[in-house]
Length: 233
Image 1 (tube, helix red, strand yellow):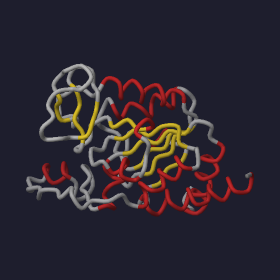
Image 2 (cartoon, rainbow, N blue to C red):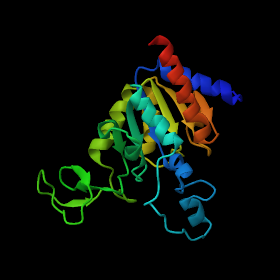
Image 3 (cartoon, rainbow, N blue to C red):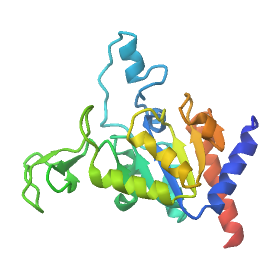
Image 4 (tube, rainbow, N blue to C red):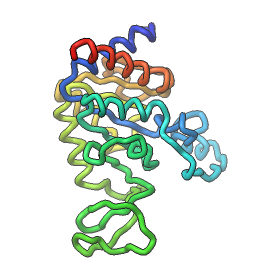
């Protein structure tokens, strides 16, 4: 289906009809906030593979963009069951997403995590001991080779299994086990929507596919959803 307007309308209708909507985000959602993704034309891994240096990223001035705010609006409309993110940039929480609706599978640059009980809290320079169990507080960011937080991973799997609509936003879906979640949703009978400018391994399985910029797709779809909700309220 090549007509963007029709695909956006279909997405809005599916979100309206959904009883259990899960959103999955990757680095691509934050490029419109000025952050680099990984596999885009100027992505971190793309530059690495070309032998190019990577300028340091300034995290301090980064703010949520229209894509982040559209997902927050889904929450405000009562349509978001759960949000799974591969991002560490804290922009979902900045946008107003409730912590209990969010699994940050790769951590968060502003948080620390207990290495014993996985309790998470804001990073404070003088706090090194978990207030719950006395374990050691470490950066919550998951580096290559490290295991993902078990609790967040289990929650993500459970919500993916329960959903009827799974929307991928800005992920190449190649970093596992996070990228296994669309498969979990598909096997449970959910519709799969992918909004990503690069190819993904799940493109042939997607019920609806957008290669356009996230800001061109998700915000207008949520606006249409708001109109549908208003008609029945």
